[in-house]
Length: 112
Image (tube, rainbow, N blue to C red; front, side, top):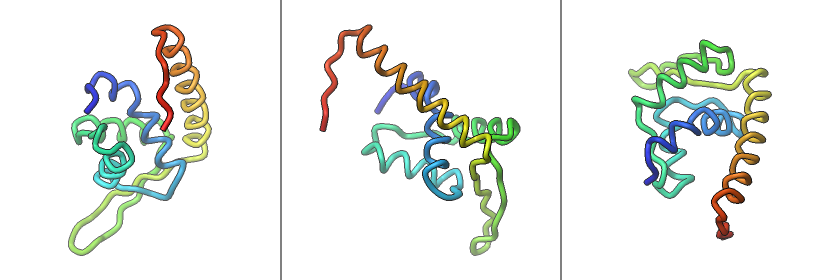
């Protein structure tokens, strides 16, 4: 697992990428998808995820709607047009950041 410090700086980008790639997702589904995609190396906590989702909704980059599933109400998050634009910007910024860190720290990237 990675430190919460590293995750905190990438959480918005992670959420934007997941939602830009697929359909609507609810919070728990996001946490599980991240665990699955990273082989459990990144485990998002509710305490970090939900405030981020709420802030992104308030900023207009995410939209929400609720559905009754069984006897539960689920809040689904989707990405807005401005959110898709921001996702592209964040991914480009993050790609550049990684390349800069590889150079700065003289890292050799392991492929595969």
